[in-house]
Image 1 (cartoon, helix red, strand yellow):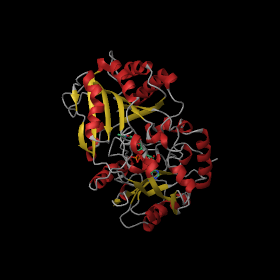
Image 2 (cartoon, helix red, strand yellow):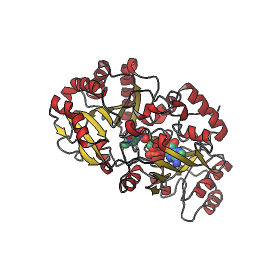
Image 3 (cartoon, protein in one colour):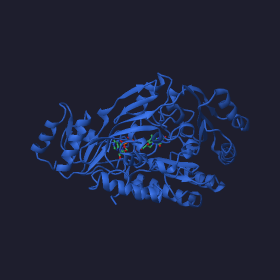
Image 4 (cartoon, protein in one colour):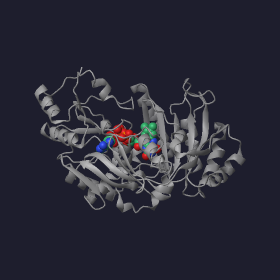
Length: 465
Ligand SMILES: Cc1cc2nc3c(=O)[nH]c(=O)nc-3n(C[C@H](O)[C@H](O)[C@H](O)COP(=O)(O)OP(=O)(O)OC[C@H]3O[C@@H](n4cnc5c(N)ncnc54)[C@H](O)[C@@H]3O)c2cc1C
């Protein structure tokens, strides 16, 4: 059992300074185990204290308490992207700070720190607008956006972080400030890609886009067609417009009752994507695929963008997952050979659930790289791989397997990484590779200015200069 390191007086004083009803949870509390749990069940963390603030003032009070107690602070919204376990830290859980205020005329949304994308998606779609969410509406807006945010509208409208008008932040000294292009512009630069290193984001304002419907979904083919599909993908992708963001996926569906029978226990090569222009043009774009072979399952269709979750069908319920990724320089034949070998082994049960090569470029690479900490905008493809890891032993095996796959892909990898698709130790070890050398040095200087004690050291590893 973990024992609280605080006197009941100190905790009582903190509680008294917060909005009545705010949860302050110490080890031994009946809610401790529920409160320390992340969405990713592979995370097993033991915070010294968990606080669920209800207002920005509560966040500032909590940060001042942490400073007085010399306690590091880990911040979480959903637990989809834990980078470092909050062991012995104060875990600040922003989930009660959820909320969206839409300004349809201005095409913007103010979004509270604990908000998940699904809430923003519903509110925006009611006005015919779209936010730049990723594959899962269950992911938190803030964690996703602080790391970049690469979703199904990215080639047309860019990364989520590029659409932020301003962030509201409680800094390490407990001050509540705004960061925008005109106020604390250095911090605004760093928050766009640099993660949760510089303070607690309590809210942000983001631009929305006029997208009501998309032509989107998946074409599923037998895995025996993987090589040919890869060749077609490589040729086809070179000429597609920015309205299309597409991906080449190798998928092993688990043999569990929750998976529809047609997919259960089966493997597929999948063309996945989202076209945000006129549906007839989307359909015409897909013609080479449908003429190449009739897919086993074809769910590419005109759909309200409100149904964007159906594109990737990511799991919603918490699960123990391990993720890794890389940027790819090109789609060489050796890439598909390595993926077939590691993702679709024919001798043994697969260790990975899927690999996904997502087409980047377009509006992502059109942004001047000096305007945000987010780097490697020129990389043309991202690779993500995910395994389900119910035990620490399996997590180690899957981690090793992913490392071997990346080793096999080395000649074709960009030297940089996309930090949103890394997690845990790997995200921290490879943080410098998440940025250009200039951006990383500038982030370290920014850290020295805004968080010299490294109070927010549970994000990407950016030690103060
Ligand atoms: C199912 C799934 C699908 C995904 N799809 C995509 C995708 O399509 N595109 C993409 O780019 N990424 C995607 N991701 C990765 C995702 O963007 C990251 O895992 C992201 O960090 C999750 O943010 P969160 O707030 O939900 O998670 P959390 O684990 O709650 O937060 C992650 C980190 O963000 C920081 N943070 C969170 N809130 C705050 C705050 N208020 N102030 C300061 N720091 C904060 C902290 O450092 C925290 O450790 C996906 C992840 C999953 C699990």
